[in-house]
Length: 210
Length: 348
Picture (cartoon, each protein chain N blue to C red):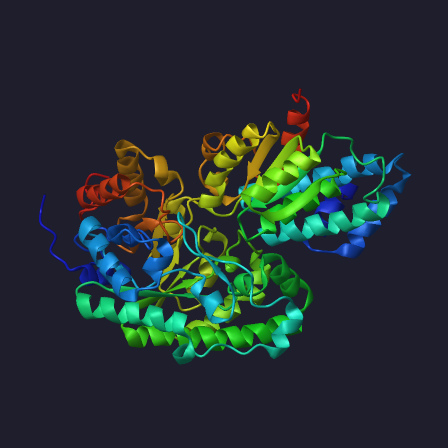
């Protein structure tokens, strides 16, 4: 018989909302919502992320899985719930890029994994610097589809430093997948190939924040 | 070195017939780089089809590649449907605000007519100018976004995925409109002088949707659309993978397939051999910082994997060389093709 994790993964990949909800409700004997999230949803999304990286899972499946999990998690752990993961202030944005699917996938995955974060969506350099300063963001996730947008992150880093803001920056998106040195070139602190990589990067960076 | 004995048209035609021409044909899709020739912004350059034609010509003289691009920017099709185009100084114009705010708008949507749409007429003028100049020596390639992939620009990617998964009737309605437009647009380019059409269909790639969904959607749409286009069509997945659907793609009626850097070029060639010409798969994002030695190695690797037997065109894996790639790298690539791409490839 398939384990609950296998069942959840398979239901997510086939967009079977009913089974997703059934597997999660049957696991409700777990002591806390966060435990259920960490023992089922996070590993299921990690497996799907690995499948995407290896080419066996498509982007539409990654996106729809994230949405289904996000819905399920909001039901068992409302956005305002104090038990959402306690982390330094986090935000996600797309700098001057109109296509936000990558951002949306990472946002859904993080929320489905119990994180609380701000979503600035598509933004320009000035707005983003202002948001980060006002909100005291410590870890910033940036998604880029186009190479020129990815290259602008270097300037963002400089502008933030000039304002006395030094958030740690995690980048992801197509240009970074095609050039593995690009994240260093633009001055990022980490790079994620998949949405699940972002979780690992955030957890690691949170441990080194001053 | 033995002199080249074929024109670009002969070289491409021979390679696409799965025979070995005098050397591996190649194309560096330097779509916007001609702006530098005139000291113009990318926006101003694309406003002048006469200058784009001259720019394309000069770049072909410089690199010696085997085709001219009757293409400006992919977002021109979104523009034709009423969408916003965003220009920047250091990259291709992109689709901005989509013309449809949601799937409900599909019911009142009317496709643009090519003859009444200035941005499309601009592209047709470019193709005519290139064809007049190139004659039969160098082919001019036109380009369309597939009916199945265009909604990413018509609706936004997220809205489109929701439409695809949750609203089958509206999806079918949009596809009918897009197919009619795509056929009209492709045939207008062929009439203007394009020798073949690149059919950009990234959403059909297994990178974006699973094969099972492709077979119910993008595959059927491509088969219907390509059957009405009155010329040769080659399919590009714009960096997306293709191996898992290659046998299906053959049945759409296409003659070529774009290979992604994410897949082994030798495996793509083996699967396509004798059926589809493989186009690819240099990594143009990484190309920005290639040394001359790296550029030569990448060219040799690609030729060794896919060159034998013909049926191969060396190009990048996306269909557009970024603005930031130095001219010196492109010249090195061109030299390496001339050095290592001569048939017979007896150095392999």
